[in-house]
Structure formats: structure tokens, C-alpha cells
Length: 287
Image (tube, rainbow, N blue to C red; front, top):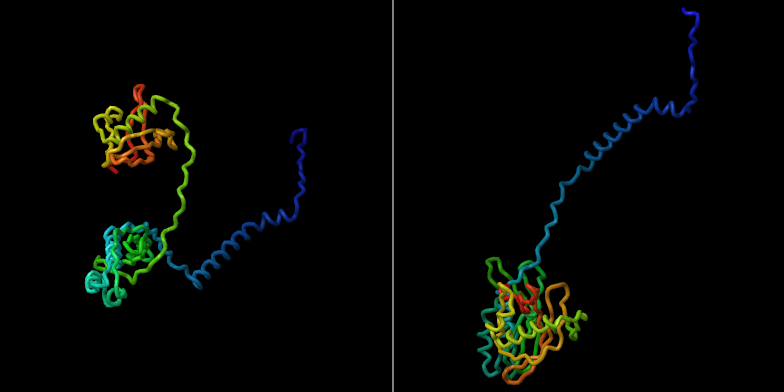
């Protein structure tokens, strides 16, 4: 050995006893925990095996309108409420196509000793679908003696695709309604050039003057003229509609008999090459 003798160095580190035991026993603890978890899972599977997954909920689309069923309900309401006490057989014959073994003769309708009633018009105003293939229609019927009546008529779509009554009708009240609601205050149009174009376009539109109206229409615009010719008396207000690109004009117009109307029209407008053009008036004739 060299003259300088090497000395061993000893370092003493203080460690908690519980840490030493934890480091030494941790692998055993982890192994035991995994084994217990596996045994528990196996026992649960044996005692209460998992049920098959529930099928996904079926999202049913809203029932589509059924024009044939609506017409069927309106026709029944018209025939049910049209009668003449002097000719009871006529009422019975009119109702016969709707009846079956589950209903009384004449749908339970018993006529008085005298009088008559006729339906001036009938229209479906409300519908609900209590079950697939079943419709309950509320039919508004204007009669010449009892006035305006509301009748519910239940209609079924049978397995073969036919239509049938699902029960007796019922007199009900009118659908909920209230007084007219004033529209939110709109921003007034302050552009005189736009006001001039709208007033001129509406004058020609109401007069059903297609050739004159064309001068203010945008390229490719399609407008369906009203069936009754009117003369524009005045434009009371012109406001911007919510959003952008359209205006609402409130006007007074008069027909050939002298009847005056207050009307509101929405027009789609756009500024092209420095001038205003109209691309639609109130409705889309192709929709």
C-alpha cells in the first residue's frame, strides 16, 4: 500500500421505520389487493351475472300530418252536423259509411221533431296523436243555426291502411286564443331612396302590374301577384325587419268596391350598384 492509507467512509442516514417496512412489504400488498379484487369480481359474476345491454332508446319522430285523415274527420263533422228533421233518412244515409258494429245507429244522433241545420264550412284547427296511428282532430264547423261549433273526431289508420272512426265525437271549446299582440318596436327606415322604391313596388304589386313591378325587382326574383287588384292609398310606416336585408311596410289599400284595408308586407331588399332592389314580397311562391 502507498504511504497514504485510504480510509473507508461511512454515512449514516436516519429513516423512519414505517417507511422501511412499507418499501419492503409494498409488492406483497399490491399482489394481495389484486388477488382480492379478482376474487370479488368472479364472485359477483357468478352470483349476479350482468344483464344484456338494454337496447338504445328509439327516438320517435313527430307524427307526420295525415291529410286524408284530416279530410275524413272534417267530412264526418260536416255530415254529423247537417240534418233535416223532415228527412231523417237522409242524415242516416250520410253517416252510414262511417259507422260499424261498435257504434249506435246514426252515430247516436237523434233528431228533434222539427227544424234543420246545415254546415257552411268545416276545417281542422288542431290535432293530437294519443297512440300510433290514431289522431284526434278538433274540427271548427260554422253552422247556419247553432253558429260556430268545435267538434273532436277520433280517426284510426287501420292495419290495411284504411281510415275508421275510433269512437263517438265530442263537443269542445275553441283552442286557446287571446287578443292581438303588437310586434316589437322596429327600427324605422330613414333612407328616402329605399322608401321610394318600396312604395312604388308595393303600388305596382297590389295593382297586379307585373311589367311595372319588374323595374324594381332584383335579377332572378320571383313574385306571385295577389288575385284581387288593390290601389295603394298610403304607406303609414316603413321599418327594418329583425335581422338584416328586409323591411316591413304598413300600408292602406282599397279595392274596387271601396273597401279599405290596413296591410303589412315584408320585402327583401338589397342595394345593387347604388340602387335598391326588391327580391321578394311577403311570401315565396316556390315554397
